[in-house]
Structures are given as structure tokens and as C-alpha cells.
Length: 565
Image (cartoon, rainbow, N blue to C red; front, side, top):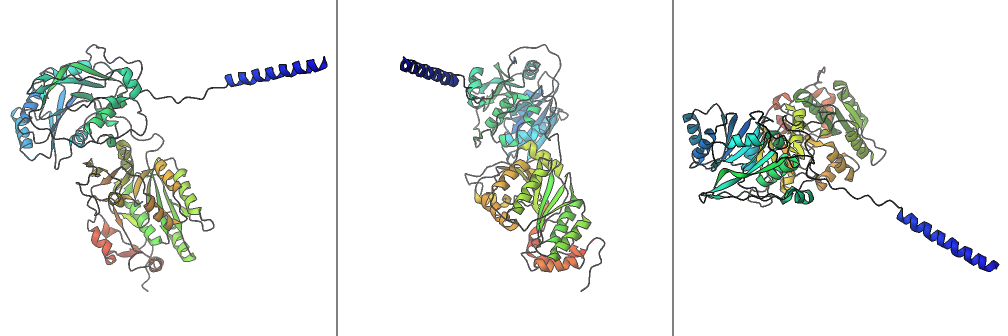
């Protein structure tokens, strides 16, 4: 009887344990599934017709490249519109025929010069680069209607019809059909169902070549310049930003001219690095580009037994540079004489933060550099060595704003597009876009080719995002400043798109690699001398200066009487 009781108790206890653990497994919380960001905004009705409230502003961007035969027909179709609130941006993209002269004369003959802004590219930049140049000069509230100068509007009510559709605040982009000329066949553009876009995104859109499309200028302003290499990638970016606020009209808006051969543009597949960020409201004003917490970058200089170069670099920044927040100097002094010289620099530039490189630990320099990148609230940093000086005026706040607006990977103050070593344009790896922006600033694509990366694979007064630079610097292996320079060149900071000034703002002072040693320069500095940067202001003869140090002049430092010994 006792044995039977023990057996039944063991079986009962086993069943209870089994049920408990089985129930525990069932009640375990399921693993969190990754949520996919929807490419469409909910609660919008772009197909809805709204009451006419106001006459919106339109800007017709007329792109012309060797369109002498058709340009007058395109302009006539614009000037005959029964809608008054519009203006025209005409971009002649390096035409070699008489297109520009012909359109200028036609504008004067029709007394339309009050509403037309004519621009001319000295060399052919391509469709998207020309479109960017025009839209960058448009007001954010204007509605852009791009038109090829070989095409024309289908009737005089085209802008009136578009104004009616854009009365709906859920319409930020409007597409239409087109009539092929000379066959007069109406296109049948089909946009994927919204349910399919919800699953696969806007990359499944058909080729929009020749399709009439109108959009708010502020929407275009919000797209990074790196997404504007081709017409297709540019328009896909617009749809991603709009988040479903678009409408396809069933009627044709333009005649698409196929009577002349169309120049094929090179195409690139550019995948978005992050999910699209949507705009919160109707785009009536230009979207802010600067971070709210700080609009001015920091400056970090590295100096190694070179107080006279550091003095010149800080003096040039003080004289020519504006729009920065703080300056930090990470320096190394290998003996007491160099340390005393750096103390002299401190007395002249007391607002600069000086961080001495430690000699106790092999990782001291790396730790100090990473700490400097994390200390400040600014999102951007100008990173450089002390053997570069500014030779011209530069506003770092403006540089940061354009860097943020274009989505470029860096702003290179020392870069010059005429530098040797670039691959030719025939190289299939070469990105063709080299776009001139405002204020002498240029935007350029860089390949992974070593010759193309060489002029930017450095930290010679380059403006970077701190987050990008911090991760790159953290993963490098180095102990001091010299090994850091070597590690940087070997690793290559990833640059796909960059900004630079047409005329470089900096000048290299390679004194240590020339006839004068570090001790010679230290002696010169201790005698009360400095490098005279006045003769170097805005100089263009940089090559001869680099080859001949005798062109560099020395003068007395502030409050010093140089020794004559």
C-alpha cells in the first residue's frame, strides 16, 4: 500500500511539472518582430477635388540643350497660358548651336522679359544638375513644372488645371499623361497600386522619362543633392518625401517630342541609406537644414613639435574664419623648449583649448582625440593639422548648412579640381556630376578609385559630421599623431559625395619637409619671429610657394621685438 502511494505520488508530481513547464513555454512573450516603416501616409485623400481658393505660384523650368529648332514652340506654349501667376526659368545647358540667342530674342519680341530668368551653363551639366540650379533659386511655395525645350504644353489651360488640382493640400506632386509627337499617340502611364507601394516602396515606379510632373519647390529643396544624379532617382526621392501625397491625372499635359534623337543620360542606382523621413505639413516654406541645438561647427587642430606653424594656423583662422564655435588643439611637445614655445602660443590665443598628448600610455592620443570629438554639442567639426593656413575668408556656418542641405560626406577647404592624379572622364568608374552651386561652392561625386580618393584622403581642413568621424577614428589603430596620419591614409575615410570651393581657401606650409628642421623653426620662434601670412592672402601661386620656401617670409610676433642674432 505504501509503495503504491509513493508510485502514484511520483506520477502525479511528474505530470504537474510537465504541465507547468509546458504552460511556461506557452506564456513566454513572443520575440519582437521588426516593424517595417510604411512608405505611405495614412489619412490622406489626394484624389479629392477641392474648392478653388487661391492662385498658386508656378515656376516653369525650361531645360534647353541644342534645342534651337523647337525652343520657340515651347516658349510660345508657355506664354499663351491663360493663367497669369507664373514665371519661367530657362536653363541653356551648354548648347553649341544658337539656342540661347534664339530664346533671348523670342522673349524680347513677345515682351516677356519681366517673367523669364535665363541662365546658361558654360559646359553641359545634364538635366538634373540644371534642374537643381533653377529650383535652388525658386521660392519654397512655388510649384515647379519642368519642361524640355523640345517639348511643349498641350493647351493654354495646362497651368489652370494644375492650379485646380493643387488646391487639395494632400497633393504635393501631380503627374499627367503626354502625347507623343509626331505619332500623336497618347501615353498610358500606370502607377502601381498603393497596396503594392505599401509593400515594396516607390522603387517599383515605372520610368518617368518624358512624363510631365509638377511639385512644390520646398519638396525638392528637402532632397539631398546626392539623390539627384538622374531624373529617375530624383523623382523617386520626391515621392518618398511626399509619402503618398501625389495624384496621376488621366489627361495629357504636354507633347513629348520624339522627332529628334534624345541624348541618353548615364544612370546610377542609388539606394537610400535610411528610411524616408516624411514632411509633417504642406510645404509652404523652405525646410530648416541646421540642427536646433547648434549651428556652428567646432575646430580641432593637431600639432606635433611645431609651435610656429600652429601660431600661423591660429592667426589665419582668427583673421579669415567666421561661423565656428570652439577651437581645440591636441599637441605634443617632446622637450621643455617646445613646451615653453606652446605656452607662448597660449598667451596670444587664450580662448583656444589646449590638450597635451600624454606620453605615459600608448593610447593617450587616441583617447584624447575621441574625447575631443565627443565633448562639444556641435554636430560638425573642422579637422586639420597645423601646417595648413587659411588664405581667404570662409564662413564655416555657411559651409555646414550647405553640407547638411546637400547630404555630402565632407566639405574640403583644400581641395582643387585641377589637382593632378584624377581619372579621366572616359573612366567608367567616374561619376560625371561636378555641379557649381552658389558663392563659388561646387558639389562633386568621388569614385572608390585610388587616384580619385587621394586628394581628399586626409584631414587638411576638412569639415565632417562628428558621428561619421568619431566612428572612423575609433576603429583605426594608432598610438600617436604620426601613426594616426598613416592609419588614416591606409583606411580611407569613406567619401562618395563632397563639397569644395572653386578657389581653394587654404595653403600648405611644408616647412618640416623642406630645408628648415623643427629645431630651426623653434629657434626662429623663440627669437620672436612668426610666419608672415599677409603676402599669402588670396594668392593663387600655390605651386611655386610649395616648391620654394624662400617665398615664405617671417615677421615679428605680437608684442615681440625679434632678436637679430
